[in-house]
Image (cartoon, rainbow, N blue to C red):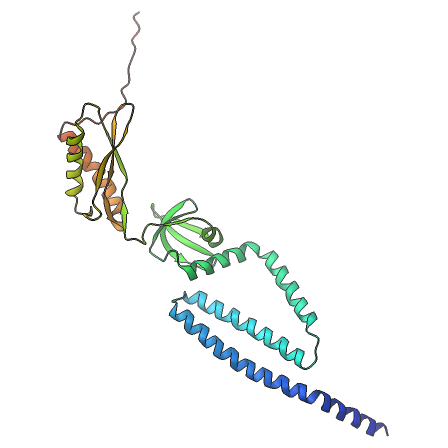
Length: 270
């Protein structure tokens, strides 16, 4: 009698749970196939968008695990397992991890944004977070720059992605902003001609955009000229230093005085 009772109970359980179990197995098989197809599409899209390799692998693994966790919860719900508690545990764990790694996650998110939107690339000269340097390496959490004096600068990606970024390389050319002051006795037209000759004789100064020379201000002891040559980005400092040196020599040769502070000494009679 007891044996028959257990057999009947077993039969009832099979009748009740067999369809759910079969449905769960089908959902698992079909779900994995769908995830595989979706992941192939995402991987292809990332490759086409030229995502950074390290970022691509990380994001693919992350997305794959998210899909798998969702699929597992669906399968468990199909067989009748209460999934609310599982979701609550996952949410609590995610919140705890997020609070503990808030700074690191911010830097990671910043790194993802930089790699997706690409405001700069390796080799670009940028100015950000009060630093100027050539981009040496873009990592998940930080970006490494080589400073103008060959020092290594490490900038957190969180701050980098949330601040202003000046990319000097993107356009391919830069304007060099120089100021030269001459005495009030100097002829303005002659000074412009001398300075323009310095610019046009420099092979690194571009003809287009054309360089410009204008009177910037009438200062206390000098007439200041704004000298604005254009050059390729990689020639910026060459043009800056060469034009500065050559302008001084050319102005001296033309007899055009560059004022400088004079010290007045007062001698007391004994």
